[in-house]
Length: 145
Image 1 (cartoon, rainbow, N blue to C red):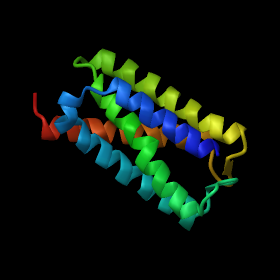
Image 2: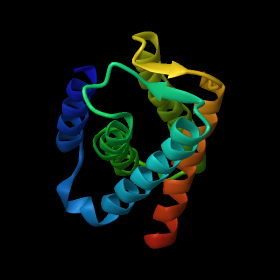
Image 3: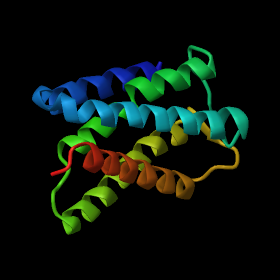
């Protein structure tokens, strides 16, 4: 149930915060965020069993697919929507977003919806930083300013 509520919340907030005129710029961030998130779930959840989701109303693979469609990628779009232009602001922005995404994960972990087996918050922070840097690099490559 919590997964569904959080998905609805995420999609709603992204619809409110995203400028539809910038979809040409934001759709690649959405797609890359989705591919990265689902790939990491396949590697670390299904294959290596470093973490797993519980109390889901649907099978874990389908849940992971839906989460990487309706939860993670909209945050990637919001991240790109407000991307600062200068380097110092970008570093602070990256730190704030990494903390935000880790806090969202912590809510799932603390509420025992996400169980860590051989995973921890440090791995999550590294994963979030890498993902945000990757979608930023994609943006800079696709839309040279």
